[in-house]
View (cartoon, rainbow, N blue to C red):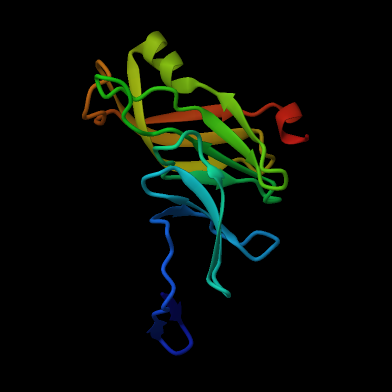
Length: 175
């Protein structure tokens, strides 16, 4: 479906995407597409609204989970996200939520940090989902605001919002 602000009308199209949209980039990539993620299965895909074409690129970390927010570098070369937000293990633990860098030109994913287990062990803080994510203009800092709780990793994990700043080394931004 699209909206034309000039005519104040909506247009419904016959195509149906196999993906349930969850997150998308604010601006188009150089090829005219928007990057997007799915709600449930962790897919990262590209969407061209003009032709209504969809292309699966990769999964965000594993076969399940999703990343409800991500940030894009100013040049569009890198996408950063906190991946793997899904229940895992017999106790429904949230674990292994790495901060991932995806190179949009090569498709290579790189883990920048594993903050979830680190902060749980160090401070007793169990992270859940990010509600916002922004990259500094020079790409050296990724600021994430998220929710979580100071208690054992059991649901629900909310009630204690936090801000996390991830420093991205220059060597990781210039490959």
